[in-house]
Image (cartoon, rainbow, N blue to C red):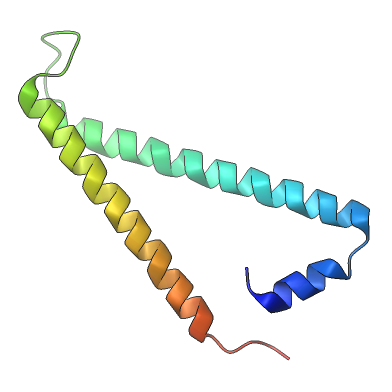
Length: 93
């Protein structure tokens, strides 16, 4: 969140600040769960191809681990790129 947005929030009444904070927390939780669900679905679909036993075999386990690492690295890189772009964006007066 940039400084101009924080300044706008500071001018709100305390009750509205609390409501906005709760909404932001809820959105962050929703986005985290969405990312986690996408990760699980993508890696499971890509790596698990049989249901011969309860646990993953060595090849499936390696594939899931590699898939999860790639997904998380990609998500972190996208987040950093958005932050870079946000810092360079002109602020409205």
